[in-house]
Length: 592
Image: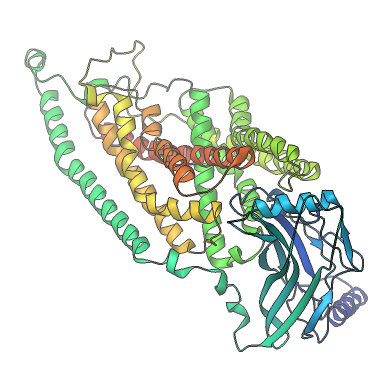
């Protein structure tokens, strides 16, 4: 604890006393992960839901489970937990640290009504499972079992908890359901005993290794993953070599030809080769179509790119994948605290091309991505409410997000826009813009922007294809993605690939005397998002067993948001590289 100078000795002593008392009284809990002998270990019930539909979750006690004795309380949720539908409730199962138990009733004998039997039967027939959190360790178990031949469903009525501990810390936790009881819908009532047992085992495993059992190293660190990284690195070397060769060979030849033409007299100049990118020097810095929207796209893309970079770094150094919903919470606050980036980028981009309505571009930039997320989330939330799912976002969480946008995102975007238009908004173009636009000549079919855009997204998609598969498997299936070092490397690779491909494509287009390079440079590698979405459709149909309106809407809605983010990130990076390229080559040419 740091104490400022100037505080009185009395205040200092009081704070020291309070700290000492807090340390003495709070010696063991699930926050410190240290327990005393026979201290209560809370079993937090999180959710139930169908095994094939990971996002379709419901509150644990929506199934008529038996509640243990004692007060059943809700645990305080973080912002990320609320957004991910985590609602932890004390199950009432009495477990004490280090105390093994034989078969023990969770509560008194329970009479299941015909409706309860019907509810459990539906859950078992649809392969429902439940999730607990014990000392922040997730544990899972099936609700029941189904005979594939007779279609008879049976409810598991016993839960066997197995713990490993080292000293005063829990290293692992596991629950194994058992004692199936057949469920018959025609029964007037069914008496069941919900029971549990506890086994504690000592181990010499270290506390820091407690999450290793959840990690599938054979899946994420196999030869295919390493080969994919190596292949992407080779692609980067090839592309950077190609761009360098273009600079050395083609551009030097162009500079030499233009310098030669500049030395000719008017008659000889008319007989020269009048073609190439120099001919559009009076139009190449013409403002893009709909400059306000374009500026908002560029600013949002830069913002999302830096947010992604910082989140990956935060996760690598903080090991935040081990904490419940911490990555979601961190992403929200990193996005909010870096909002100045979007304002600065969009404000400078808009001002450079003569834009004056900077207030509107600021609001558009600040609201575009949050509004897109809000629209998709609202549709999904409506479906979640209809299904009474725990994935429905509470009203208080919505208000908290709105507060973050109003009090952090909007003011920082305003500051960034003002700085961008004042510090970097001056048009420093090497060529003046002609008042009358030059007609764009006809060109061969493969030089059309739409073709260049369609082909431009292939190489970036190829560089991230394998990583996309691992991310999809992690998010939509039951794998814990933890190789964020690989993720950072792939992120850097795709940025380099995007810059290289966009520079080559831009040179190709302006060399056909087409000065519409702004939107083209954004869409060239931004088209990677379309390939990702097509792959997502294939993944949904071939690699998952998802079904129903709930999961389909969540899958395709959230995937659409991810693809939009990919478009904006790669598009803004591509435009940045193309802009630097355009500025550089026109500064090196003698103009008439």
